[in-house]
Structures are given as C-alpha cells and as structure tokens.
Amino acid sequence: MSVSPELIAFDIDGTLLRSDGSLSPRVRQAVREMKNRGCIIALATGRPWKAVTETLESLGVVDYCVCLNGASVHKGDGKAVKFNSMTETQTRASAQLARRLIPGVGLAADMADGRHVWDEHFTHDFPADFSMTPVRVPDALVALDGPVLTWLLDCKEIAPMKAIELMSPQMPDGTEVRPSGLETPEIVASGVSKGSGLDVIAAMSSIDASKAWVFGDGLNDIEMFLWAGHSVAMKNGHPKVLSIAGDIAPSHDQDGVAVVLERLILD
Image (cartoon, rainbow, N blue to C red; front, side):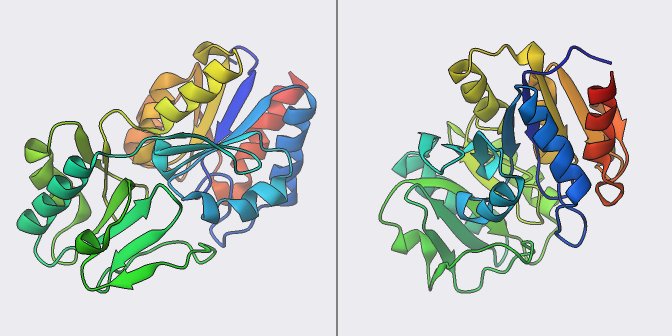
C-alpha cells in the first residue's frame, strides 16, 4: 500500500458511477470518510462543468473539479480556477484540419463561457445525465464568438482512434488531438490533461503529487496516472490503463472505489 493520500481524484464515468449512471451509497460513504480524514477530494472528468454538478451534489464533499480533461478547473462551488483555451488561430486551424482529413466530421465546441456550439450533424454517445443545452448551427466554426476550450469530433466514417492517428502528425503548433473518454476524439491546447489540472489543484493546496491518489478507467486518465503518487485502475478499464496502474480495483459495478478506500481506511 502506497503512502496515505492528502489529495484523491476520481474519474466519474466508468469509475465512480455504475454502468447505469448511479452513485452507490457504499462509494459515497467511503469518499465522505476520506474527506472526514482530511483529504482534498477532486473529480477529474471529460465532462463539462454543467454535467458534473449532479455527481458533485450527491457526494457532498467535493473540493475541486477538473473538467473537460483539464481544459477547465473549478472549485466545488463552480467558481472557475483556470481555463486553458486555445488561441483563435489554433481553434480555426485545428477545426479546418479535421474537416479536411475526416470525411463528414461533425464538430462541437466547448466554449470558455460554458456554452456548447455544435454542428447540426454532430452526434454523440454522452451519458444520459449530461445536462447540456447546445446551440446547433449549420457551421460551428463560423458561429464561434469567443474562446474555445475543446473541439469534439464526431467521426462518422472512420474509427475515432484512426482519426487521431491521421490528424496527430499535422496538428497546428500548440494543439493536440487525443481520446476524450467517449467515442468523440477531442482537440485541446498542448499539455492540457487531467494531470495538468490536478497539478494546479495540488499547488493551490500545497500538496506534492507524491501524496495524491487517482482513480480512473480510460485513456484520458493516463496523464493523471503518470502524475500521481499512486494510481488505481478499475477492473473494467482500458488495457493500457490497467498496465500502468499501481493498483487494480474491482469494477465500477462492484463498487471498486469503495473497496480500495475501505481497505485504506482499515490500514
């Protein structure tokens, strides 16, 4: 067992929540117990802020949220700590590249002011509880009127990982394309990740990364696994995530987060 944590960060989908989107009372209680023991509690998710609030309110003890895979960092009350927007040039050049290389791609912009601007033909596999009201337009790129945190790509004719492979060598300076945790790859400013977001929180809280524990299941969790002193992958996670984890928990449907935290509490 690694050093006792001072900061614990949880991915949401596939980690904290069960397959049906519910938060089990056992997991909720275990997280609250760690908060009672003085830990900073954070959520680290690909979701935008508006789609985090239900989980945050159910837990009742969240200090910080890393949203959009690091593109925004918030306090538990929603107050913004940091936005990592792309420049206007990066925003436009990366979207134009996606349209050139990916046949029929649908674009969706997560704006720094909290709005979501989507191509009319953008479709997605978001969890059912995503509380979002996007603005659908004929051309999201033309409709932009402010800073963009992320582009999501609806790759209708090729696999998401193939799209990432095609785009990566040609990305505009200062941008990257990567898995988002859903079936829609995302474009962000270079270096933005759950790990970079948690580093902001750790610095604000005067906590070293070696004293942080992180829980996750997806490719978008890799950077925070590499950043933290101890990482816990859910048994239902991606093989690459399982291969680098410091510990493997039972699946999210078996309350894996609670199993590990209860063991930590007993130790």
